[in-house]
Amino acid sequence: MLSKLTPVFKFSAGVLLILVIVGMVWPDWLEETTTNVQGFIADAFGWYYLIVVTFFVLVCLVFLITPLGKIRLGKPGEKPEFSRPTWIAMLFSAGMGIGLVFWGAAEPISHYAVSSPTLETGTDQAIKDAMRFTFFHWGIHAWAIYGIVALVLAYFNFRHDKMGLISATLHPLFGKSMEGNFGRLIDVLAVIATVIGVATTLGFGAVQINGGLSFLFDMPTNFWMQLIIISIVTVLFMISAWTGLGKGIKILSNVNMILAVLLFLLMFIVGPTLFILNIFTNSIGTYVQNLPAMSFRIAPLDEELREWINGWTVFYWAWWIAWSPFVGIFIARVSKGRTIREFVFTVLILPSLIGFLWFSTFGGTAISLEHNGVDVISELATEEALFGVFSNFPLGLVASIVAMTLIGTFFITSADSGTFVLGMMTTGGSHQPGQRVKIVWGALLSATALALLYTGGLQALENTMIVAALPFSVIMLLMTISFIKAIFREGKELGIGEIEANKKLKKDD
Image (cartoon, rainbow, N blue to C red; front, top):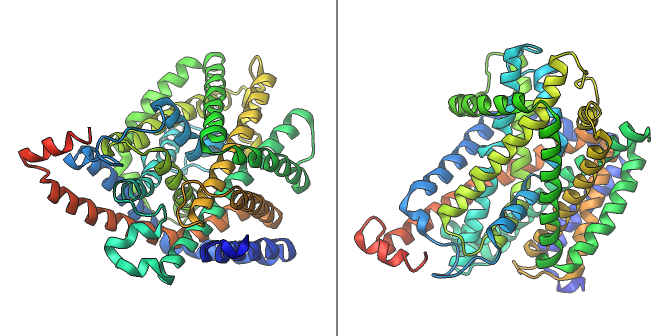
């Protein structure tokens, strides 16, 4: 019943419903408005995005090496709910999923042949630059954004019995005001950022499935095809959502990993294997070597380079921030019982390495094909690049079908996880939100994705997401400060750094 729902649900659902209506009735106005706001944010706050995201990375790394990393995200002696392989599969599926498949070949080939991060295209150096910046966008910075939100939520929720809400993590800073309208406003902003972030990714998935069908079977690429795709997938993810976290999402996450491994192995074996291994190894070295410089690269004196940074780096940081309430709450929910050190290592390092292998395989193959004059992948539409790569190899049709299936299962997993998280956020932090609430959010997610696609396709998705991310980035900063204050206070109470600390923390281990 609507009367039993929280004010957070009513207000955030109302705002998003207005967005959907405006997008359908006045698409040109919405596209123009979001484009103007997005341009202002990228120009005026690009420096802020780079600094704040790097700050999140540094905080995570501190807790990877500090004695405070022994503290458990739960009660002393509490065991994890999911096995480590299933846990990794769930956080990876929710965290990157569709994005890896969509950009796996498209981003590296774009950096190499279309728009280089160093303004040098088509050369040997351009290959190295393309892979280095792809690693940068999908590496530890991205996962630190997810990780800091998840870490803070899991710490307060499972160790200190706070509600599973963003506002609950700010109690050490703002006290009881988080239980009133100020706290509700925080949660509403988190819900809106979550819906925009997830809807953007669902839009990417629909566009790429459409692109695959167009490339393989000459089907039309338009909004109506994407509407059909989203409608079909909506029915499927609502069925999954109805089965609950322990069944639907768990099963789909494992299916995702199996399909992703099969697709990866197929491309790795039939593709330029030695080149893939060499570019992976070399790119890790240049990534680590140049990480500080890339982290703060804003190009204040070069307008063309600054435009590239706004279009790629700032876009990605905004994307991860907009996704972070959803991914963070979900990762926190499935990470109960892990130590902080295990959590930070697994969330930051392992998915980053998997992503690097993925981009080296698919992006490296795309670059190899074009660099050696075999095929021109860069002239294809972004959503068709991956299928263009497959067409040059044996079993290309099979690989394309597996890829579209993988996009579909990632699509379902992301939407399913999104409905679960939104249900939690709008029912007072319940770990078992009602089925009807999840269904309502599922419908709003799909409607928002369709409205943004109708408004202006991929560009409208990107613009709206960057706008939604800015206010939540401030909330993330406050969450991090609140967490640091609380955990150092607990560390002092435990006597961490003294002999007694190890005895007390062994109860957690």
